[in-house]
Image (cartoon, rainbow, N blue to C red):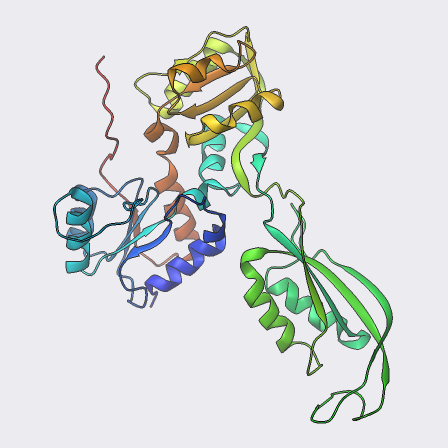
Length: 366
């Protein structure tokens, strides 16, 4: 049986909560993670219709992209739609889980799905996050280095880009003197010992530190392990805001806008005056991405695709880059499909469905 905790743990392995923005409220909004999960509905937003759908199907988990709670609630008295929905969810033992900017900030997530639909190649994060990784340096007797390295890799350390099990080993001599009360695996009390040791250096994402250190201690022969954890200022291109890539073949500006309109089935696309006649390099950010316009310009993108742009935002590129506002819902509409595919791959016997309801609050008068 699969518990709600199993689902949450998997999602947070793929999109750790540590990657969410400071203003966000991703994670378990309400519900008991210890419950057996009877099924899940995925949706961009939590609405009454989505909640009723879960009740009708007897599914006790709803996974949404946009958290229903952004500001603190002072009470759950059903005076507004959010409180009303949460009370109903609690009454029916339905857990609500939000996976928001943490899913935006992984290369394969919301923006990766948009890029796939557009047909981009060679994608990378547009604005990489800093301080997402640290370095572990640990000293171990030479004969135990392989076992310890394997344990660190299995815990998730040592991945850089498209490479795994990355580390650096060097050898030297370590010294220590066991004091009274020590129980050394090597050496005797009161005598300085010199041991041939390997120094293992390995990178790891900050969110796995606890499990990594647990694996290190479990697989290390010493009673007291000598190790260092160093913060890194490096940018790692798997984590961050937006995405940039290239079309296989360049397209005319008009043809590219038509391609966007068809792909995202948007009622309208707002765009700026530009001197760009062809589009090859594409930058994008699902949802509201105005903060990345200048980053896209700096990388010489031909177009920046996003949503929620204001009147004055369209002046920023000064005709050097096409801006295309395709709509907030439209840009993120494939996120529930992404979640379904991901969960089906991990839990093939588990019932997970995309909501049958369109939650877009915006309509277009044509």
